Image 1 (cartoon, helix red, strand yellow):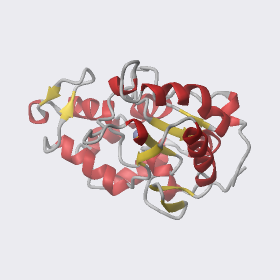
Image 2 (image 1 turned 90 degrees about the vertical axis):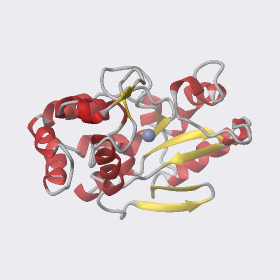
Image 3 (image 1 turned 30 degrees about the horizontal axis):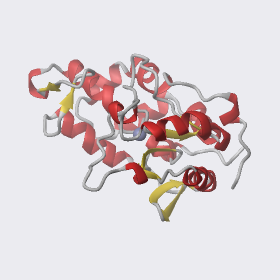
Length: 239
Ligand SMILES: [Zn+2]
């Protein structure tokens, strides 16, 4: 077993578990760097330039995203992608709408350094801005070949995708990749009580309403994932 996470690392309030890479630019858990570079080398051999577009994100960054959506300052979307007007929704409806697309601060898997969002830079046309929408990763989409390659090849390097199937929680995010041996350790360590303690002292909009239903939100938006297969879990540790 690798070094356990501490509570601040699990909730995005510490950087002690991270390493910064310059090529490609990203911040990952120190024990995810070697497996990621091995995965990237294999992808490269298949003609794919595997690049993280979002890697580690801290609590304050996630808090800014949450509060921006809660206040209607950032686009808020229904689970079908339709635009919502936050100020016309009651508190519980805002919370549910935000959670379809964004994690609670303290509860993002991006805090762990084990999870990151990827694209294939080699398949990205000049002047094309990746949207990170499912259509890009579906057959015919700009990243369809990347999605197929991840399906067949990522588990040998320990990686899996926790948000592929619609499960009534987080919307499908086929671009979101996770290093199973370490992310599963983080998931087992992470509890609703840790999340509550991180949120108690925060400036989260809707905080009291979130804390009242925290156990249910945790079950639906944190615990409910597509689990890694045994191949990903048993991948050799490369660090
Ligand atoms: Zn992600």
